[in-house]
Structures are given as C-alpha cells and as structure tokens.
Image (cartoon, rainbow, N blue to C red):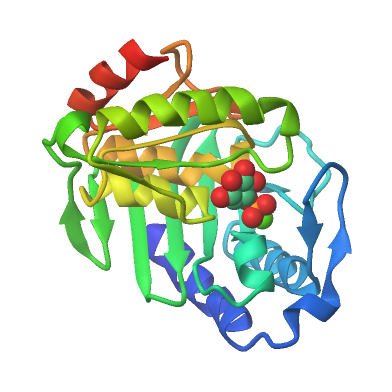
Amino acid sequence: MLNKIIEIVKEAGKIILSAHNQESTITAKEGKKNFVTKFDVAVQDFLFTELGKAFPEAEFVGEEGETNLASAALRFIIDPIDGTTNFMQDYRCSCISVALCEGNDIIAGVVYNPYSGEIFSAEKGKGAYLNGNKITVSDRPLSDGLALFGTSPYHPENTDETFALLRKVFDFSRDIRRSGSAAYDICMVACGRCEIFFEKALQPWDVAAGALILQEAGGLALNYEGKEINFSTPNDVVFANPKAYEEFATLL
Ligand code: IPD
Ligand code: CA
Ligand code: CA
C-alpha cells in the first residue's frame, strides 16, 4: 500500500519540478495572502486520478477541492503543494502531502519534497522512514534545540499571539527557523534535525501525513490544549519530541 502511494506521489512531483512561470498562473483565494496556481490544481488532479485508480474504494479531500464525500471507510487527505508561496517564487521548498485515513485513524502518510528528493513515509505501527531509512525524533530538549514555526499567514487575527509566543521560544531555544511548508517542518522534527514545530490554524491537509510520520518516529502531535488533533477541522498544532514538548507547554 505505502509503496504504491510513494510511487504515485513521486510521479506527481515531476509536475512541480517541470513548472515554470508559476507566478503568472496565480489566482487569489479567500482570506489574506492566500493563492493557488494552476500547478496546485494539476498536482491534485493527478493524485486524485492515479490514487483513485489504485484505491477505487477511497474518497478524497484536498486543499483545492474534494470528491463527493460518501463517508467511505478509506479517505485520502491531500495537500498537492504545501508551500505554495515558496513555489510561486521558486524558493524551492515545497512538498506534496498525502495521508490515508481509515475512519478517524491515519494509517499511512507520505510527504515528498521533490526539490531535495526526500520522501518521508510511515504506515501505522511500522515506524517512520526517510528515503527508506528509519528515522526517529531527537532527544534534545528545546533549550538545546531548534524551533520551527508557521506564521498563520492567512489568519492575521493570530499574528500577535504567534509572535509573542515566538519571542519566548526564541529566548528559550538555540534559534528559530521558518521554512514555508508545514508538512516539511513536521518531518524535520520527525527525523531529529529540529525539536519542535508549532503554528495556529493549520488545516487537516497541512498536517495529517506529517502527524503519522512524526508519531511513528516517536514524537508528539497535539493541539495547543495538549489534546489529540482533530483531522476534520483547523487546529493550533504542536509537533515535538517529548522533552521539547514539556518545555514548550510551559511557554504557552
Ligand atoms: C501553508 C504552508 C505554510 C503555513 C501555512 C499553510 P499552503 O500551506 O504550510 O508554511 O504557514 O499556514 O497554509 O497554503 O502553502 O499549502
Ligand atoms: Ca498547506
Ligand atoms: Ca497547498
């Protein structure tokens, strides 16, 4: 199952790598700073079609629209390009994020950064992998670690709170980083390069695949209340190794 998803996601990555004149294909979406390019739609169409052939019983939820939801047992949650602003400007840090859910459980997740060639993947109960090699979260506390964050760019009502918290995290940690792709950030925590990622108001397609990958790598995927993430609504999220989470919770 996982290998089939990986194969299709890699194929979809070719659409991202061959894109040009991205900025000329933008349309604005609802909210602030929110855009979509014709490539976001093309990648999603490709994934819906090809995954649909491989998993005919599944339904699809994607950032750029969904199929008729009939409450099928299997559901894909997809962000065709996570990091659209990076993509528009050819910043070359964007990912395809694909999660497969059975009921409320995420049973498989794939995050692919076509620019770096990194494929993060996990199947529930079977560990997390980067290009086929097992990964785990780091053992570093936040005080000796790197913190990743997102700015909730489409929700300006969150900006003051985000930057107030960020200031505390910056003071507490070695340093902070902002990549522009939430799915990639979660995987950076999963493979132990960074200790924590947090952002308010992320959508299920930003985090679903990464959440399974991180949990299978030994990390915690929680909301700001310390509860499980609900993958059918927006959430304020924290993804961390257990030590870093403990310290972060005191800063919230
Ligand atoms: C966005 C990216 C970004 C995060 C935003 C997301 P998109 O996804 O993950 O890093 O800060 O909150 O919405 O719109 O590029 O798919
Ligand atoms: Ca996204
Ligand atoms: Ca997207």
